[in-house]
Image 1 (cartoon, rainbow, N blue to C red):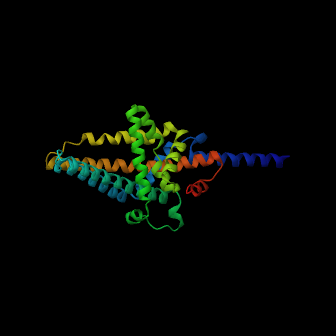
Image 2: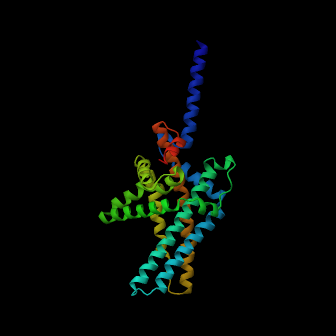
Image 3: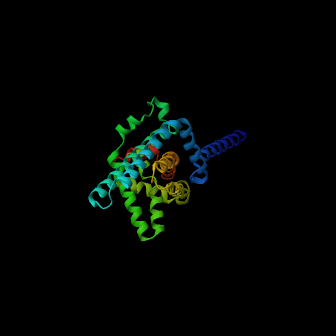
Length: 275
């Protein structure tokens, strides 16, 4: 009888330890561990802070320069040239966003999800540029923007809901190697049970970052252009990098929570995602 009691006590202790460990990594009762996500993103930022800033600031400065060039050098009365210039500036912005997001996804995986412990090479921007699924990520980005615009045209609230549900589409493509439509569905599936934490971690920060551009002066002269580049390049670039790190880490945690609720492992979910 004492032995039985001892075994019961040990079993209860083991369960308590497992529950405590699970709660520390995944949050209580299967909820999104907001603090742990932010801390994990901060670890990635500390580990590769200068490289992240270099890529993020470069992307933001190039995007800002493209937009300034269109506004100042292109005659708005020339509709064809204006249209081509606007498309070119948008393409620069999308390509830069995709490159930054892919770079951040690889860094987060290396820092927090085991890649660095298995002999993986140091993540470089050249490696990311070669290996990124560019066309899938670009198509997904365009589809997300289109859906958000349609939702916003209907009413503002549907647009915000769509943005929240599709917040981790890009990371889902990167982490689970999903196709475009599958990634859209996957993001909505992962987010719908944790909607408000995702609003807090994704939607609100993106809305705040989108207001940064409004504090920059109108680029009418050399001084104003430099001020715009400082605001858009440094401040906006840093904010976008921070949000990107959080989104990637959030996607990892949502995948883990979904796998736990369905009884599958994250690895098996990622493996089946290619189909």
